[in-house]
Length: 206
Image (cartoon, rainbow, N blue to C red; front, side, top):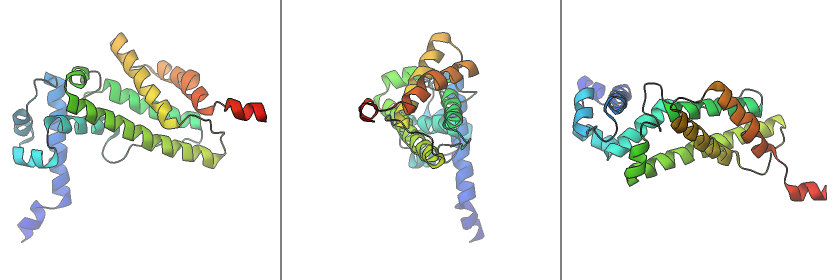
């Protein structure tokens, strides 16, 4: 009975998932999305394919999970409460920059061909980005409102979507990770003006 409990314990199950995601991440970085196989991931993780398919129905779903974990770690999107909306946006943009460029983990840049050619994988990645932006946008908006910072007419989630597009373009066209200076310019020159701008109709009638 003890052996059965140990085999099915949440801790052991999480360790198995982590090993599979670690293997998937390493192989994508080493070989590229197209050359990675489920067999290779199973061998690297010393896991059964049955276990992998139970957790993730396709290779794309598994790699998307590895991409998400590399960008934000386990659990929900990390949200900082820095005391200002600007500081909170700087924190979120830094996280987006990591997901775009990676640091030994799968990134949007080294998965761009898979995003282009694999419709299922593309849908998974888009859904993850939209969900993360919505979650972070709602949290940042609530924090800003609690502080009494003026809210604008544009959803913060939409501004974070702009950040993804800008940082990905920067990484693709420069061949390197967006620098801190580039991230700060994005926040100060684009995102903050977007989310704090006043509604022209409101301004005209005030």
